[in-house]
Image (cartoon, rainbow, N blue to C red; front, side, top):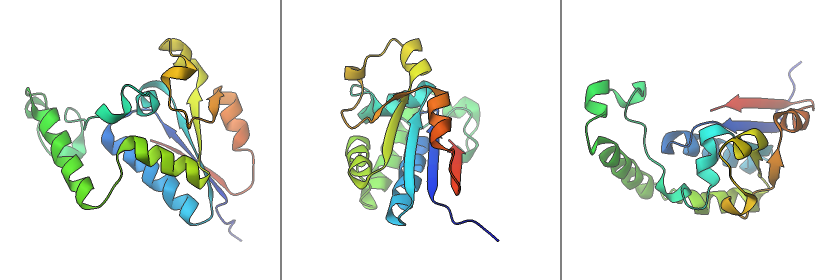
Length: 157
């Protein structure tokens, strides 16, 4: 007998556009299906919820096998900016909201947004550096306790 998914917890560790939107789309899709969802932003994933950085996320062109370009070419000056511009253009065609707006949509839908205490401390961030929609700053133990329920899945991005 299978258990219905009741809760999805996403851990975002890198704030590249492709990773942030993957977490946002999946968390939003869960909410649309009536499934609880939460996103835990850790290490460089915190950039997706920093007020000064969230609208300046980039596509990773170096070491990204999904780009299908050699690392040397991905590292050329301007390549990351070009790839980012192209991806944002394609996302606009699909009416994908910008990062800040998407975070507001997620929060309004009931998706919980958490900052990682270790990463916040390591990068010397303050609560006021992070988005207003943030539900709080948790230790990883606190986050895992939120997963202690039947039908909960954790996805690391």
